[in-house]
Image 1: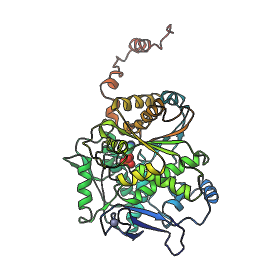
Image 2 (image 1 turned 180 degrees about the vertical axis):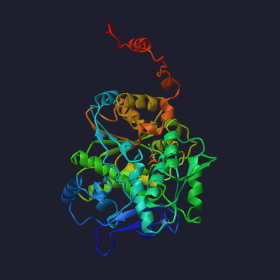
Image 3 (image 1 turned 60 degrees about the vertical axis):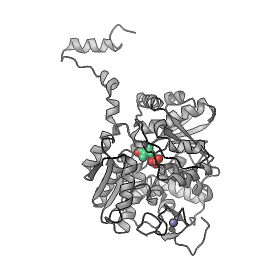
Image 4 (image 1 turned 90 degrees about the vertical axis):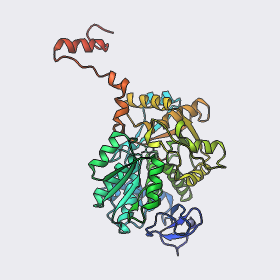
Length: 430
Ligand SMILES: *Cc1c(COP(=O)(O)O)cnc(C)c1O
Ligand SMILES: [Zn+2]
């Protein structure tokens, strides 16, 4: 990240062998060793304070590019993108405060960055707008991904926008209904693979180049450039006052990698004067990264994953190395929470009227555990990222206990009066 004028604005570098590639190189992995690539940008010419002002003026402007909560930060995401990225637009998600949720978590100053407000209902759209823009730039003829659901919904939507055929590989029978329905609706070809997510990713990763498919999983480094803007937009919403902790769920660890990179760049380039700590929360049945953290990352851990939170049901996270870097750089922590705590957190979020999908609730369950153990002090400022929309997983809402709250009644005033009184809201009660 050293400033140097003989460099192009952006390029790619292999995280394993340091081999460099042009920004527009179509290979999503290093051509020398197959390692994961990272996009690097020359330091922006404008100083941090000027950049912050520029981002602010774009907030309410008209053109699609700056209206987007991703392309508003173009200088830090893809400086060389043309005037028409593949954008819906996306981002501009709210930073919410709910007293009941903060109370439950045990920290007063708790904000929720709700990425479920993106066009297809998850943060994946922030990565996909950049990934699909790159796909168009390099002349891709078709795009593909493996997915636990949200990436496929996002890919399908942005591919339709770009006019490209899309193929998605999902673990058969393990994808939440809302996500599958979206993917079909946006017109992608869905391949339900007999195997888990990790098998889907290995399959598409090994064959995509041969089959002429541009791979848009989070191994694709351009997706992470877009996902950095969750952090940038959150910081902008906080007036660039840095929180003490940012808490997020971790599955394939693309976001963990992106958050660390965003913070490192923002600090190096003068947008923020200190770095918040990251806390990555996994489900106990899918917690290889938490186990790795407990062992000081001396070993890469792989597990058979099982959890109700399907979006983080991942046993062999692709972005392991770059995520380790993020945890080290931010003096972060990684923890695991049981499914019961995830569902308890989700109930609190849902009952407050906010709502989110199960994986998102892991973040809140994590905050509660970290305050209970004293790791996060009660007076800390914390931002928890809600990664996906409540409607993504209707099955879990309408599971046995949820369905029991639906009462069927006759179409008569008496039946309605009885039902209202039974809920303690009728005349003469309370
Ligand atoms: C993809 C996803 C995650 C996991 O993010 P990673 O970057 O894979 O760690 C968490 N929650 C939701 C809702 C997701 O869609
Ligand atoms: Zn390499």
